[in-house]
Length: 353
Image (cartoon, rainbow, N blue to C red; front, side, top):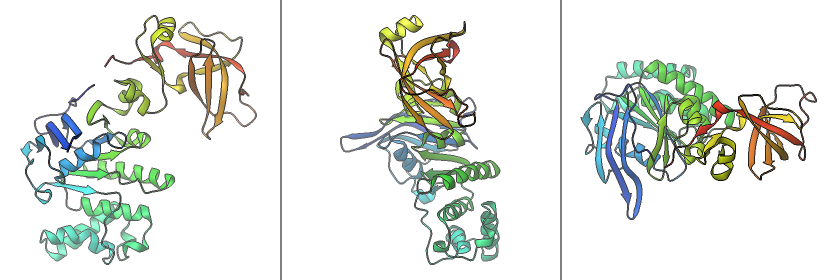
């Protein structure tokens, strides 16, 4: 299991440095001996299931939780013992936390007012922040007059207007429907690039993390199992957990792996890499072919999912992009015998942990 990783661009002046971080709640260890470097200007996601420690780490960075041991550094300065309001970070929560009796303009101005910024200057800065999320036309409205996505944008503007060195986002899109969530993912990425601020984003949604992040830290049981770009963690998972958590996996090990690949080491083949042909077809020279029977078919819109079982009892999942017009596909159904083949270069070895 991997507990630490340093980006190639990480330096002593990383936006956030966590050193030997531990956090326990009674007998429960939430974070275990965690080291992490997050460079300035990076969109960094912490991904993992509930209880994996990702939100606890975010709250420790924000100052809402106190580490049992270890240090938190912001741009090289030790802030471990500082209160949240003494740290140059802001947090955007899932519930938005807007003041219902204040207009959008006044909501965004609130933090500037608390910092005693002159009225004219804070009005100007707030207007610019609202413009950055493309909601200037709604500045005079109250929060209840906005949609969920619009309220989320205003919560983001209120955090950005203070120009924090680091913006922490705790599952901020979790309450949105799928279409709005996808629109906000694009907006968040655009705003982060334009603002140049380090974003640390907590989510349990694998697709969301893959779509938005420069790098992803995959959390499991209070530790980081792998850090890397979306492509790295998906194509070359460092553990069976990472392979399984990031999308659908075909994990093969033991005698089955020995027979197919010459080694009993665990490997992973992604479903989209498996090509299906009707029985009697032959695999190419650089491919591994497995004779199997389709036991289930599921149409999911963009893809069709096939569950297969080989003659030796190996269960596989394959997906196929629905590129053809209806009625022009392979016409494969449950019970059909097929050849499932994949290229050797698409077999990812899973390190022994």
